[in-house]
Image 1 (cartoon, helix red, strand yellow):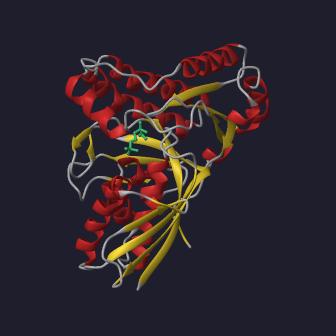
Image 2 (cartoon, rainbow, N blue to C red; image 1 turned 180 degrees about the vertical axis):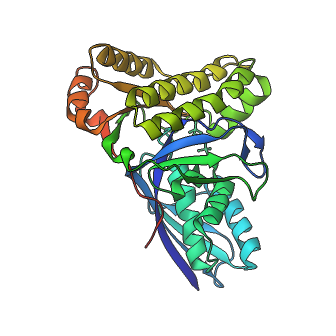
Length: 324
Ligand code: PMV
């Protein structure tokens, strides 16, 4: 019996990954930049055993059906090949995050699984190689290996596509991200399908791709200069561009709900009234608001004029992978 356990935190992209250059290897079309967060995480234990005749996956103590186990099994196949280990595995995951609602549970989930496998099979992977492995499970997971600000270098092969820390002199500890939970139901269009549809059909996709390099450069300059307004502006703008691509897909779709628009509008109003804050969104209706740590209480109070207290969750910069 070979056993490993790890915890990984979610990350939210400020400059988004949106579109794959290679679907099989999960090589992205553009570099992305994220903040790893403390509030949401996944803890996973994996046990490879001679006694199993198939892979088994429990999520929050609930046995998952074939469909729910497929992605995990596909990832385990990669690991088995790497370790030359023929054994099936039981995976136990606890998600301290609402699953599949655009709260990036796939980033923490697959990062925790990759690390648990690394420990169980004594692969002894460096953080970079662990990031490459996590990437194969879910693209955004490669960023959850690291703490704070993280850049995913798209590369052009399995070897060259990995995440790494963006040096920041600890500035991330002065920032916060407030989540406005609009809906914790499963999303209609997965990020995988959404990306594929926009890459293949959206007339706006080229515009997205042409500007992400500049956006990422601006974000890194802002981090270096500790310029919150600059980082917030490029974050919000980049998210709007990503979501713009979905409107021009054929057929068109959107991750926004009426309450997402309400949240974006609230953020704009609060900002216009003098409190610096900027929104971002992923493949779901929830809205995340980037602000400075010193402003969290005030921002939260202002947002309660629009949303219920229990819809608002505060997160700060979080750690990378932890072995348990
Ligand atoms: O790696 P995935 O399938 O979780 O895709 C993530 C896509 C976005 O959340 C929309 C953007 C990002 O960079 O995290």
